[in-house]
Length: 477
Ligand code: URP
Ligand code: ZN
Ligand code: ZN
Ligand code: ZN
Image 1 (cartoon, protein in one colour):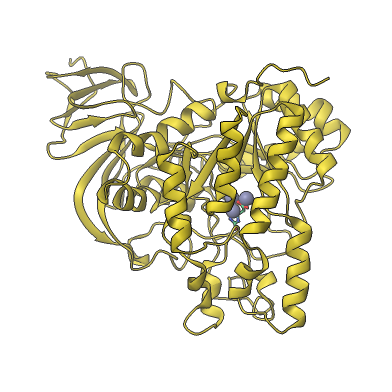
Image 2 (image 1 turned 45 degrees about the vertical axis):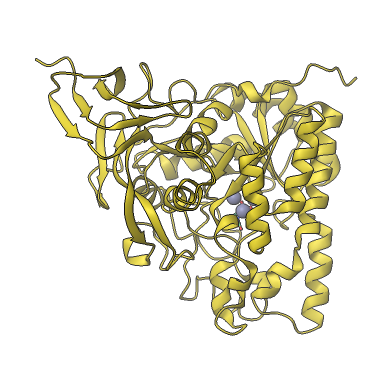
């Protein structure tokens, strides 16, 4: 009998800290050895010429979220996590959403019904709080945090989700008490509503005007407001899906003041622009790219890189939020053709996050392979209470691994994708660097675009408290 169930031999191990030529020995789903030469192994994978990196952790994906009367999402757990593993990911953190008036606990129970037994990779839940009632804040959230749902998301826009300033403060205060990390969607509701009404009155209803209705100043204002509320309460916050210079500079300013403000950016903010929303000629095809915040422009890409290089952003996520393009339930549903405001917000991208960041980041000399690993895996594990089980390659970690070919050239195309959506907004983007094998707790679950795992493979992750969520210690009362 061999000491190891699996040995990955001949590769170069890349972690957030180091790059070393080493073999990796795996037993019972865990990494038990990383060494110059490991003999034996019931199964051996030859990784020569490949990089051996921690599997991607995408801490911002939306799967099977309730539709509020709008179009249904194109991915539940089955197709969404299938897409995730094909793209080199081994863990996703989607959102259990509390509809207004509903109990959060009941929403979490419902969401487990969507997820359990339906996931190709491991998963945990963030909690979207749309109705911070006294019972939610006083009883439900503290209990849920204890059960491993240790991060919340709150919204400063969207009719069905927006919290006012008082409610934001209440949630922040609750999070401080529970030790939870709050993710904030920073776009100002009233500004967007105002702009939308004015644009519609002027007949400017094409998908492109989605971007015009929520310019960077709207994101900057909300970012500053969230930071100020977090400072008042002395609670750490994560500003998610940052799109450009204006909000990035607010986060940098807060960090330079010593506030515990973290930043996340996403694939679309280094690879798409608002011009994509113009479609072929200011037509509905631009609806394919509608997400919030909208992608900006090339100068914004550079600002995002400045934030990545400068450490303003700790995580790089997909904000995978897929809808169909065609059909009565799609981005171009009949109502959506009457105004951009009815185009469902969100785009699929969990499968292309790693290749696009690698290609534009490492391939074009903007970040190191180690920074890539930090941005796509390690920091997600550390920030969301999954470390040191997930997020690195070392003795004791789960054997969640992606074998990466840094030289492989591909062009992103819908035919390559494993998601449920009928299009990819990243169609035609040429990349160098591609996942050739994904290993989940020691089992090969995807290889060369073929799915080898099953939807019973993924396990629910009861997460610990985030060390990043610890207040500075200043008493605010
Ligand atoms: O447009 C987007 N990104 N929709 C998803 C929900 C969110 O705000 O992250
Ligand atoms: Zn959001
Ligand atoms: Zn979003
Ligand atoms: Zn999102």
